[in-house]
Amino acid sequence: MKTIITLIVLSLAGIYSYGQNGADPSDLTTNNLLRNPGFNENLCNENWQIETCDVTCNGDAGTVWLNHSNRAGDPAIKQTLSNLIPGTYYEVIVGWRGGDHGPIHGVSGARNIFSVDIDGKEIKRLTTNANYTDWMVNDQPESASAYGQITFKATATTHTVRFRGEVGADGDVVIGYVKVQEVDYLKLIGGGPEGPRSNSEIDAGKTVNLEVVFADWSDAPCSSTNFEQLWREITSNSEMINSFARQGATVNFNLNKSWKRMPHPMTHYFPTTTDAQNWKWDDYTRDGQQLLGAGANFPANTILVVVPNKGAAGFKSVGSGAHGASHRNIRRMITLMPQVYNEHYTTLMHEIGHCFGSGELYPASSPYTHEVGCYDLMGDVVYATGFMGWHRYRYGWFNQENIQFLHQKGEYTIDLKKLSATEGTSMIILQDPTKKTKLWVIEIGQDVVSREQFNGTATGKLNSEGDRLIIYTIENPLVAGKRAIRLVPRVNFLPRHGTTEALDAVSYKEGQKFEKRDIPFQVDVKTKTRDGFQIKVSITKNLPFKIN
Image 1 (cartoon, rainbow, N blue to C red):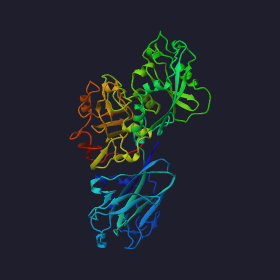
Image 2 (cartoon, rainbow, N blue to C red):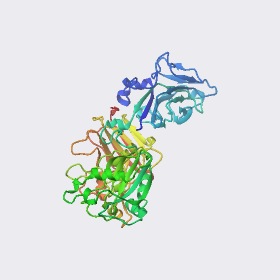
Image 3 (tube, rainbow, N blue to C red):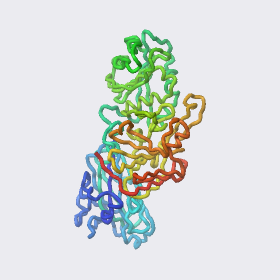
Image 4 (cartoon, rainbow, N blue to C red):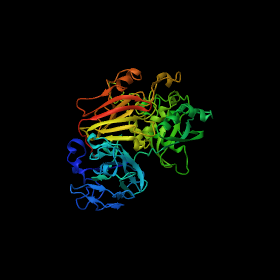
């Protein structure tokens, strides 16, 4: 599970304006991993290491000047963070301003003079405002309550954060206080099927490992040996692999190229005298695991896939499913049913999602409303082609640098990129104003295929990634009769699923707007770009920023 550390450095002047513009200053010492985060008056250098400068403790308390009197070298302060988790992402937010007498040194206008470094390496160069007395939050005016994200990934248990001024020009830098706190978007949900991952789930990892066994029965034997062809039919040739690649994951699969005989006949597992829901799945899954035989353990995130004899009858409409397992380090398995050969690769991907802990997003109750539209495989395996951004993030496929978390009052103009983009912001997260275990997510809708494309009779799509923007919520505990993830439709959910009209009703296009009377933010979809949309998010009051 990935977490984030937020490092906040803000001016003292900003403390008194936070009722309107920013974080609650009373949180300065809550869960703060830094020592002397407020640069205490007359002790502002305590617990901080100084480089190439004399620290000036200002009389207004809690501000530090980085100034080297027009000499060589960049003045800086730094502090080492301990007990970090390798592989964890951290977000840095810096509030600062240029020194008042920067222009005296010939430094005028907006200049790139302030750097945030990790272990001596620059990760972001910040630009001052033309007016040196204006406080900044990262590279935006503090009054705008907007900021450019700075993120880094911990590779060790300790890292040193350094703030360096006069970079490339002799213009002073003033900083205020610093806060380091854990921020984990999964923890904001608190629990449930879309919250933090549990020990009962397997780690998705960047590589999906599938161990594939072909099973038949004494009363339904199979003689075909073209196992590669059977697998191509189930995975729609290379479409499944391509889909995973677009989502940031690769697939390794091993085909056991022989028919493994189940110890009981088909009629034992699927009795003809019971309904479809009463098949002996416990016997089937136990016996299916044993088809692997003895041997070395598999990688911990391996999924066993039991593939049936194509064309076998007698399954009574039992659907494919995901189950727990316990054999040779395999903890999850998928039992496919013969109808999978007439379906799409998305059936197998849906079950893989269950193995990674995701719950159903099919309609929970009547009326039969698809509240994730055609945008996620956990709610649709006919039109959807992949997982929403939240699932990709939860699986560990989505780069933390591509997420922007907003909670401060202000207007944010953002170039929102496609989920498949490797750079820039691809997902925006906001916390609900009243329910702290509910999040709002803004992202661009991925490919949605037409019924004809699903059947292989046409190539057209209902939606190409980048055509539409979607907004959805994630919450815990679940609302009665609802699923954990639901689209916030622009108009409404239409009864006819899988049409352009239905997509238009739940999605947003250029020139359209999301706004609700009881929600303190709105989204304007300004213009369509080559890589997505330029949007403006307007937040009318500070949103909660609470972790369970």
